[in-house]
Length: 280
Ligand SMILES: [Cu+2]
Image 1 (cartoon, rainbow, N blue to C red):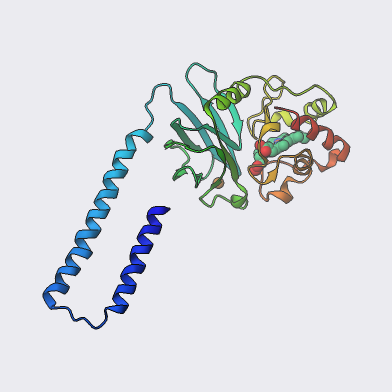
Image 2 (tube, helix red, strand yellow; image 1 turned 90 degrees about the horizontal axis):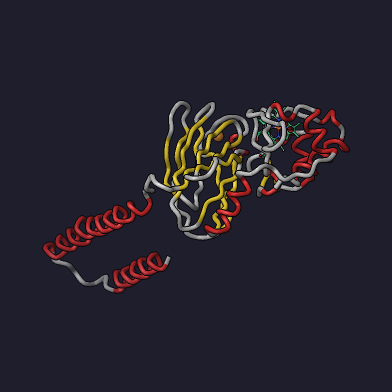
């Protein structure tokens, strides 16, 4: 920012100088020299300097393969499968949200289940395509705590614009605590919501760790209650919004593979939503 301001001030200074100094005539020789030095020589030096600086930064960004956190993200119409791999721990399965530790390099492993998607967290790193049958990797280093927005950056169907996620950069200790919870069974209380979830076959498409729900067609719901958003960045994560999505997913997300369950009636949908919101 401040470098930008300095460059801007220098340019304004030059502009004022040029306007005031209009009367002075330049010899052809002096003008030629000015163009040579201020043109190709100066620009090349600045660009070369920036390139050297960028190359010097690179090794720090490139994760070493040992002990590094790898986050596998698979794009699928219109949501994200997420699996955390950290050596010495069982993989933790999640969806539609990325969490990463501040100050530690993370390697993203990017894939697609169907069409070409593109993984993009504008404030944290570059854009990288997710291509069926291919694995791309993207190193990311978050250097400030916060909740950032991520999105699919490649048109992938009707609800492409509704395929987003939040990226939460956390202090390493908080992250480890969070990851521990993610790789352990869901903590939801048994109750009417859980029975309804089982009875209506939600488990054929969704997995809830520690229950008989083992479906892999839709997002893992084991800890859905702790996420920032529901339905891949589309709705704030409240009991009410979960209920709305169960009742009319097709209205909220045209072309989604989640069928509507409006026929269950609002009381049952509410009970299921309460159960899901309680899964931390
Ligand atoms: Cu997409």
